[in-house]
Image 1 (cartoon, one colour):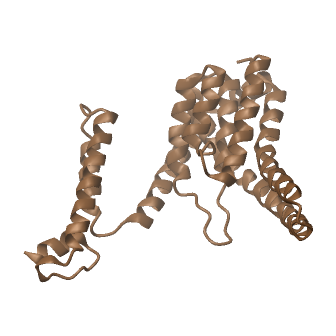
Image 2 (cartoon, one colour; image 1 turned 60 degrees about the vertical axis):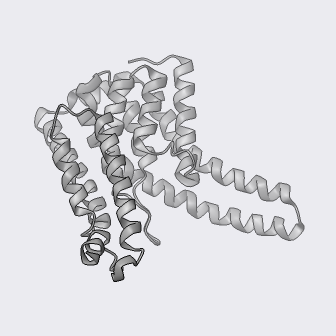
Image 3 (cartoon, one colour; image 1 turned 180 degrees about the horizontal axis):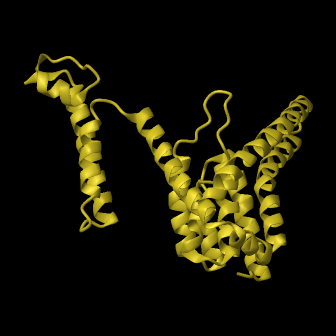
Length: 268
C-alpha cells in the first residue's frame, strides 16, 4: 500500500509521540494497542493494526524495567511492525508476519534506548550547570531536548521504513517461505503466552486465583461479548475490594493474614 504525504507525516508524528511516551508514560502512546491503532487510523488500516496491537500488547505485558535492566522497546516494535504491516498490503493475513518481526525490532529498540539514555546523562550535567547559573530557561531547554531525543529514537526508524517504500517490504514478505512464516506465527503465539504467564506469575496470590479461574471459564463462553466480560471483570474487582476491606477490618476477632477471603472465613 502506498501512502500519501499527509499519511506519512501523520505516521511520523505518531512515531514521535510514541517515542516520547516511552519516557513520559502519561498518555501511553507507546503501548502497542494504542500505537498500532493510531498507525492504522491514520493509514486507513484500522482493523489489521488493531489486531496487531492487541496481540503485541499481550507480549509487552511481560516487559518491564526492573532495576538497571531495561525492557525491550515496545514503542519501536509497535510502530515499525504496524508500518510494515500497512506497507505489505496483506491486511489481516500479514499480522502473523508482523508479530514475528516485532520481537527482533523490540531488541533493536532496546539498543537505541540504551544509547539515548547514555547521551541523556550529558544533558543532566548541562542542566546542573544551568541550575547553578539560575537559568530556568536552559534547564527547560535541555529537558525538552532529552524528551525530543526519545521521540526521534522512534520517528527516525519509522521514516526510514517509509522511505524504503511498499515494494521492497512487500517483496521481502513474499519471499519468505511458508515453513518460515508458519514457524514465526507459532513462535509469536508462544511469546504471547510466555508474556501473559510472566504477568500472572508476578500477580498470582492465593486470594486472586478464584477470580482468575472464574474469568478464564467465562472467557470460553462465546455468547458473552467483550463488553459483557469487561462488566463482569469490574464487578469481580469491586467484590474483591469489598471483601478486602471486610477481611482487614478486624471485626469479629479475626486477624488480617493478607488473604481477605480466608480472613472472612476465619471470622465466621
